[in-house]
Length: 292
Image (cartoon, rainbow, N blue to C red; front, side):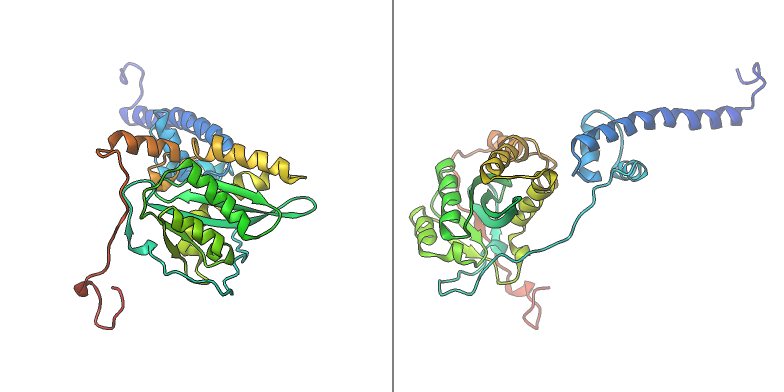
């Protein structure tokens, strides 16, 4: 055929390799643009998973290149505001999370709170997450940063989930989580208390990650005048976006609801047992007493 058309075989193959990938890349680029605009705070890894779920062959590096060329890469704002007051007279518990081996939901709950800015005032949001599935199971809004705020969020979580005695509740050392009312409620539910070290927010990273997601994808996207208006949008974001839809890289890019449904379908025992604890053995510790 090349001889009939007076075209060399090398020219034919060069033409083919230039044209065919361009058509496929156009389809991938269109999908990347559509998904990136629909999920404007997703990074290239999450967008790559969504593109692959539509049946297109595109790796994370290809998606990153296309998003960079089209100026669609998400921009992170690195900022940390201290809201924890750990200078109080209440008891502080050690951090147990680093020793837990999670295998199911209701084995570890993590809690934290943050401030949200309205047009004329500040309000405070407390949340409780299931650490295994990253699902928000309790939250509360209030104008005061007191123990009653965290208690409301915990009561909401206890009303939604029936955790077996022995589950671990982890938080920071703030007085809102160490106060008598909050601790009594946890002990009545059979919880084992755990707290991060002072000045170590990364030890409660799952809650910190959710708060960052909430602020980037909902709070910073629009202004709010009243706490009631904010409460409506926070509930909508949690119940309609974050829990059932938003994908997590730690959950194989599934949403918390999808992940829990998959775990329930493959679970052999209906009951939820407490998490097991794993400590370093003597041979796993170096001679100077430090972990290797």
